[in-house]
Image 1: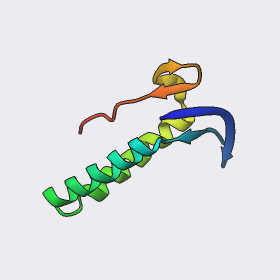
Image 2: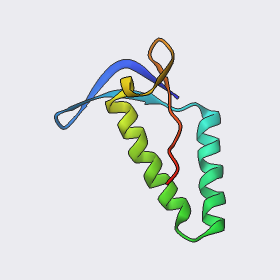
Image 3: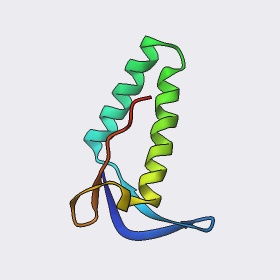
Image 4: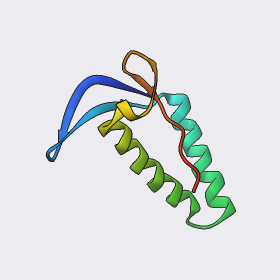
Length: 79
């Protein structure tokens, strides 16, 4: 995952553009399917939680570990 220098406005909040690599996107889909097979609705909850976290990364990238200039890595916290 990475953020670019480009900032976008959403309402009054300035957000960075979030780029999710294809490999990460595939892992997200696989995880969602897996969780859904474990419990109905769990995959949807996972995706909703992930979206909240991605929004946080876009808005506050400085709160997360920096791998390279303007590239941020974050681990999803467990509930």
